[in-house]
Amino acid sequence: MNKATTRRSFLGLAGAAIAAPALAACNVSGNSGASKAGGGTLKFWDMPWGTPAYNELGKKIITGYTPAEGSAKATYQIIQWNGFYQTFSSAIASKTGPAVSSGAGFQAFQFADQGQIAYADSFIETLKKDGTYDDFLPGVIDTMKTDKGYVAVPWQTDVRPFWYNKALLDQAGAKVPTTWDELLAAGKALKKIGASGFATGSGADNNLGAHTMVAMMINNGGGLFDPDGKPDCVTDANIQAMTFVRELANEGIIDSGAVSYTIDNLDSQWKGRKAGIGIHTPGLAARTGAVGKDLHVMDPLTSPSGTVAGLFFVNNLMMYTNTPSQEASEAFLKYYLSQIHTYWQNPVGVAVPVLKSIASADYYAKDPNQVAIVEKWMPVCKTYAAKKTQSFAALAAVDGGQPLAQFAQAMLQGKTDPKTALTTLQRGLESIVKR
Picture 1 (tube, rainbow, N blue to C red):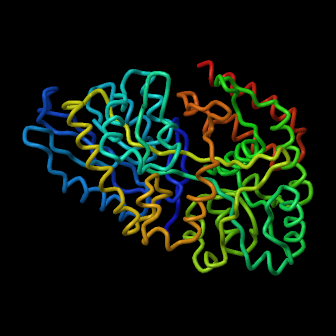
Picture 2 (picture 1 turned 60 degrees about the horizontal axis):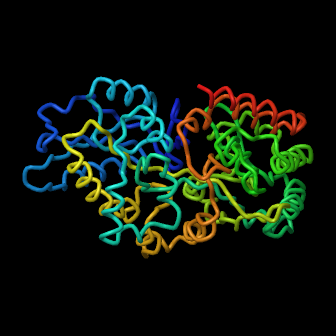
Picture 3 (picture 1 turned 90 degrees about the horizontal axis):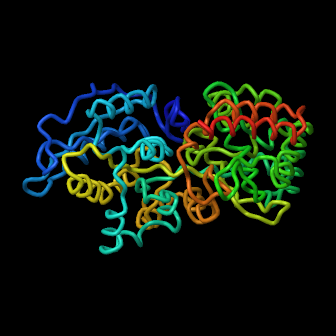
């Protein structure tokens, strides 16, 4: 697979877990001729979520859309991750934005706060009536729910599972970990053969280090927020999790260069058989070429608190208030959901599906790693909002923001007291959430 772009925050550099190189963006144009009563043109904006073939297939899907007589026809437009927030926000402000789009995981929450999102409650009721609702994996639709309604509809998930290189574990005489203590033991064994037992990175444009820190907190029953959505970093669960990470760093189980590893540097560690265990994206095996045959998804670890949990991001499809008609948006979205299986059927490099019918299909189920992610990780994963059950707009600024990135770098160096680092993170998140 070609060079990847990691999934980034809503405020800046963004991308998919298995996204490929940038494609030429189309010019932004208005909904000329559209009317609230129907007809006109319904604009669908999409991102480069996979290989270049992904957007080629997306355009084909939209070209095949035949709306009901008198309803809006659809157009397809690629929006690059580089500068995407400015593209969306300026187009929305000038009423030239999309009627429906994909986009960053927290984008819908941000625009909903601005009054620009058409809530999907009535659409979801339609899905319940025709049975489509039951095809969604448990819990994923609920991640889109806010006090005002559903801001979007999920279409894929970006999970952060643990991976391991079986050949390296065998060489080191280590077993596949199921607990943190076993992870420490395996890491020590891998160190003896020159491999990392907790491969990650927090260099430029690499937020896997930050994701890993949050994943470990959530795994231990912690998280960044309290049930009311207020920053709550300095907790016993989080301190215990970060104390463990510091131990991994001080033992040399975390590579000393991890603090500055870009995503390419980190991938090189896996390809060069220098990484034995680590949290990564669902597409790691595909990104590592020949080494991929030795890579397997671990079961979620049982933490010292006895909890089993992980981190995921739920990417979604959102509808906007600026549309030829809400009926047209919902009709298009219904059609589009009925076609997304083709992205995995081909396949074109997208992440983990949210529909049972895709996850159980032969073309997907033939990969045991992807099956393990769906069956073992999806049921226990939580979003950045944990311990709050609902996501919210401020998460857009938290994901990939400076406070979390700096926190990850501090922890990977193993020199900072966990409570002190978490206190600094707490202040940073408080400044973001108050904006």
